[in-house]
Length: 85
Image 1 (cartoon, rainbow, N blue to C red):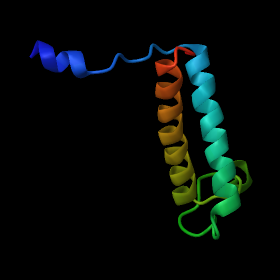
Image 2: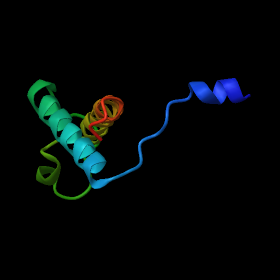
Image 3: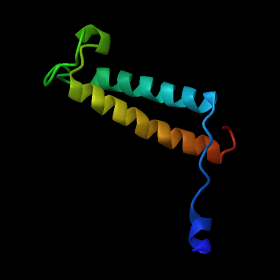
């Protein structure tokens, strides 16, 4: 079991810098979604004011947030591997 545990990379401890990287990646993903989603308002609406979510439907919000987290995960792992986080 010990050789298998040696293969697992160390996880990054949460710091405000890690949070800022994730926030920046989510904002970038929302900008990418805003520029590329052809019909962002099709589907179930988000609760409350639609303008608060940029006019996105629930699917568009979930999609852009998911993309942002995937990009953020990669950015955090990459920056941590380089010793920058």
